[in-house]
Length: 147
Image 1 (spheres, rainbow, N blue to C red):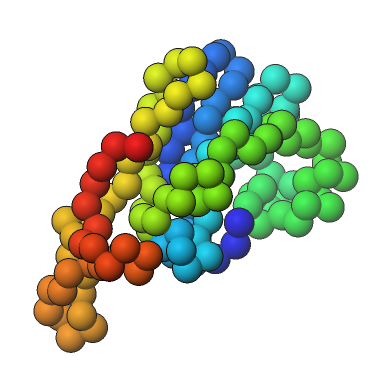
Image 2: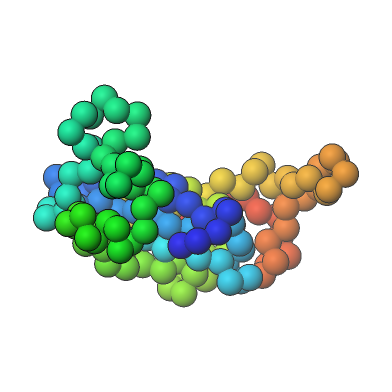
């Protein structure tokens, strides 16, 4: 993921080494939005806390924080990432339209509850005035609902 509004919004444990992770951008689903849940496994991944776990920026490579390092530098340092597989693409599977997919709860039996931040169904009109936040696909005001 790459972009100003791309984010990992929620992580929920499904075992001691496996987690479900939200990856999303800030676009509506029908406008090319990314709303995905990945299953990651930390077994076999490198611990990147660094030698001094009280250090503000954790492990360093060539005197740079991991976030400042290239993938080649990370690989050459012998750091192993988590394993990651797509669990569900909410846009492709469910037609998920919301822009701010921000929460998940694992209900068991391969079921998830997903939550979005609807901004109370209000946006700024660009002049500091509120206006209704309309979903492009449906033409309706954005409001939370459980899927």
